[in-house]
Length: 253
Image (cartoon, one colour):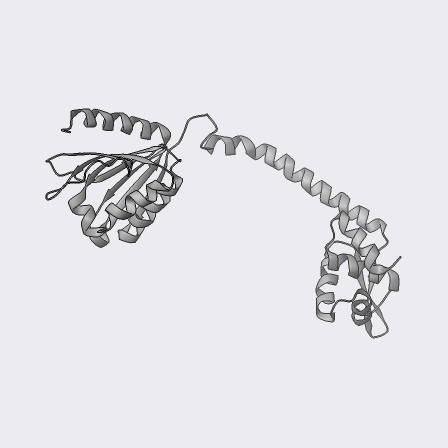
């Protein structure tokens, strides 16, 4: 059987292609110098040195001397079985150790007790807030509803194109919006084509709040000092939706 063909079969027990070729070449040649093993395995000399070191660490090759020459000797094929036995023992030991660690890991796991633990993310600067908006727009489910409180005097200073880009982000997934907003000059009208309902209030809103199905995002727009906080929690989002609907009912149409 050709060396390359036998080496290919040997890969099935866990040796890499080059490890298998070098081992079979060394087994075929008997005690041999690196150059001869490299030629037989059809691998360059430098790489063969590296592979021989790996095989030696696995107990599949040993180093010897013949006169002044260093030669490498492949251990008998049974050494592969011993190597696999050692690997299996290591895996078994690791599994036993994991059993000891698992209770501690479960104690700190977010979902170990079935209670949702909110994930909180922070964003800084205008680019951070722009990224945040894009991320949660992509995460929103198709045909879902986004609720928002917004001070458009602040928003338009930082994002002059928001009235065009915002609906564009939502329209791709047919996401509807309900918006309670403040604006000193002008009006943002409800628009069925844009899937948007709006209500304007007189008192300026202090910070933007966007409520998604599983997250609430709070933002303040102050140029480079802008900050955003995203709380990923279905329960908190549900509570905020209830507060929004109460505000919606009490706002002027």
